[in-house]
Image (cartoon, rainbow, N blue to C red; front, side, top):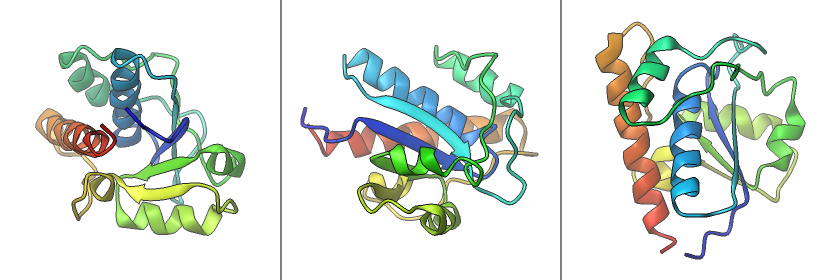
Length: 156
C-alpha cells in the first residue's frame, strides 16, 4: 500500500463522539495492516473544550466492533492547540463546516484537509449522533467506518 500520510487528525465539533470513533477506527485499521501512522482527534466548534470525557454511547458502539476507546481519552480544543493542526499531514473532518473552521486555524500548507466523505470520494456530512440514542451512534460509526475503508482502498 502506498499511503502517503503519517500523522492524521480527525476533527468534529467537540471531540467526544464522532472524531473519537474515527480515531478508533483509523487506529484499528492501521494496527491490523501493520502501518506506522499516528492518529489523534480534536474539536473545532466554539463549544469545544479540553478534557471532556468520550461519550459513553460512542464507547458502547465501538466496543460492539471490538474497538475500545480508552477511558482516559479526553477531548482537545484545537483552537487552543493549533500545533496539532500544523503537525497533521492529513486532516479528516466530519462535516463541511468543520473543514471550513479548520482551514481558518490551519497555518500549514503542507497538509491535506478533507471531509471524511470527500476522502471516500463522496459528498455530504456525517451528522452529530448526540441526542439520537444508541442507534444514532451506530449510524455515525458505520458511516465513518464506510468512509475510512472506501478512502483507504484508493491507496491500494
